[in-house]
Image 1 (cartoon, rainbow, N blue to C red):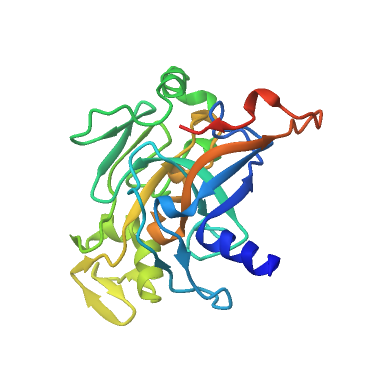
Image 2 (image 1 turned 120 degrees about the horizontal axis):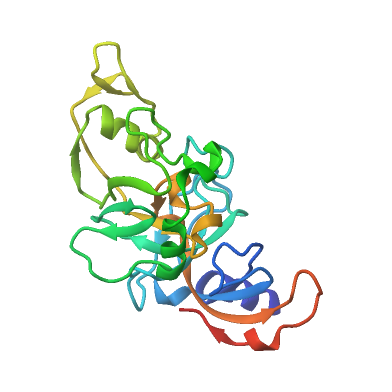
Length: 268
């Protein structure tokens, strides 16, 4: 009976996640154990035995909003060139881009067209913006989609349209590069550019594409040291576990001491 109750709570009510790094510092730090309340955005139901399961989300109490800190399955656990589900690989980041947004990074600052709300950790971004470009290693400075023509980097990025379910885009070279991973994930077919510059999905030539899913852009609060959407791209909505709610325990990873100042800290 106890086991059944525990499984029920894990699926429908609450889960705990240990934070391994400081990429979300100072809001969440290494050694924190955070609680996710599943009913806030709705618990996920899926078949664990499926390699790439179909995910159904129950109705939630509140929608995902900009600046929410979310726990999610990392969408590129084996290879940054493809999206796949790994139930044992979790990240925690802040949502700075919503479905339908057009997002860009200008000198390190996150901006969304038509949105005046500050996005992410502004203080960290302002410090980051002052760092000279030539002080970064090339592997750190270059960003998604790693295309020599667009030549985006972690300080000057975009604009990137964040797909919304039902949105239709023209399929040209730029869009085929930007959305290759998510289109291949949705369709389970290869997307490629032919010698005559036409875009092929499998064996079919396509001139436009209608997205089947919603996507998000995720950012670490510690801008200079975060492996986030600037590097691996867009997060499918069904990969999101839920909103981080509370630090219920925190152990200093260097001293193994309990950090009472973080006990029952609300996450914002």
